[in-house]
Image (cartoon, rainbow, N blue to C red; front, top):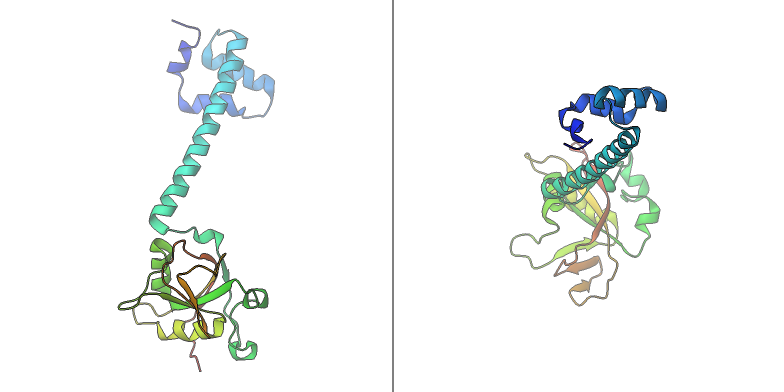
Length: 206
C-alpha cells in the first residue's frame, strides 16, 4: 500500500482542519497533518495538502457553475444582474418617467409594461407575444409603458412592472419602428433586460 493510503481513513472534518490550518500557522498545520496522517513523509504531507486544497477549489468552482445553471433553469435570466429602480414618489412631477434620465434618453433603451406575474414569466421564458399578437411592443419612453403596466395589474397580480431593455441592433428586418417605439416580431436574440420598476398596487395612474 502506498504512502498516500492513510488518506482513505481521514474524516472530512479533520481533513478540512488540516487543509485550512485553523490557527493559520504553518507549524500548527503541519502538526495537524502529522496527527492525521501519522508518520507519512513530510514531502508527501505537503503534496497531500496542496492536492486537497486544489481539489476543494475545483469543487467550489463546479458548485458555483451548478448554482448558476440551476438559477438559469428555475429563474431564467439572472435577476441579481438587473437593477431594480425605485418607483418615483411623485410620478407626475417627472413626466411619469420611472427610470433615471440616462436610461430615458438612451436611444438603445426601450420599455415594456406588464404585471409582476408576467415579468416573472419573462425571466423564465423571455418576451413572448400575447394571444393573437405576432410581436412584442416596446415604447421609447417609460411613461407609455407605465400605463400598460397599470392596466395589466389583476387581483392575482396586483403589482405592475415596467421593464427597461437594451437593443444592440435596431436594424434587424424583424424589428419595425413606430411613433411610440418598436415592434419585435422575432425576439431572437432576446433584448437585454437592464432594469425594472415595480408599480405599487395602490398607485392610480392618471
